[in-house]
Length: 313
Ligand code: 6CS
Image (cartoon, rainbow, N blue to C red; front, side):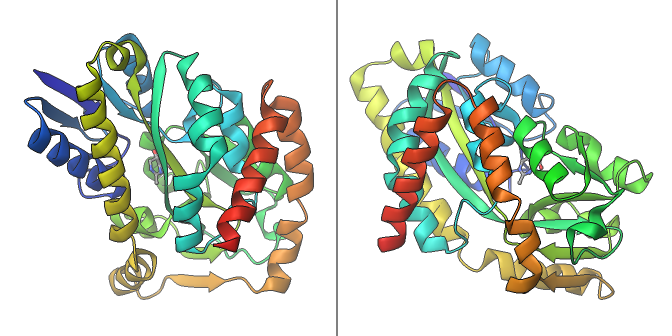
């Protein structure tokens, strides 16, 4: 039979590459087929999540940026400066984290979802219509964020006017001036041509984009052990593949942006310039403890321990 898998990006973007590898592995090792639904074919991220919860879809990729209202603990990924930028460290963290692999699955299960994996998609950068060197430059800037309450808090702390929007509205809103900024990893800024509607890219180092892949839980629980193993192995192969695929991707994407639009300004903020942004982290973390659900504190503590372990190597 055919299993349906929706994701939030195009086929040749990171989530699409992951999904294609997963499909290839499942199809090579079972009689099942996977039908892929890239962004735009079944609606926005909130729509595909509903479809996965109701069993219309067997698999869905939804980033915690959109899962915060459903699973408040998933907002932890928006405490600024929590995740490192080092790619090897990040990969090891996602692979071995007890918070991700043991504490999050029951929270997703409560929502009818089997959490299969989380993986990083790259350093998040701001793209804006005016330069950003300090929080003061974000004053009065309507800045699009994913629909996640803690991400809203964090951009408020950065001094901006956060505007939560689904992805499909971002390009048009920048074009018409409803918003003046947004954040995303470099590959996505390049592939979705964010440089056409903004003039500045600012690297503040405040986050790395996290995404999550899950199955409808009833579907997954109803599979044979053998079939579950095929899925788990395919996820694990796709994880290794996507980590490898992203090596050098950030810098390559920035080069492509500069080729497409030589007048684009890319600024990597110095440690000193980053300081005022970093100083907001404690208050956003406190806010997470208040709005991050029953497990907020336990998840945050475990995640920090997992990050420390990944940093030691
Ligand atoms: O900003 C967003 O909404 C989108 N960003 C990425 C990198 N993937 C999917 C998501 O919808």
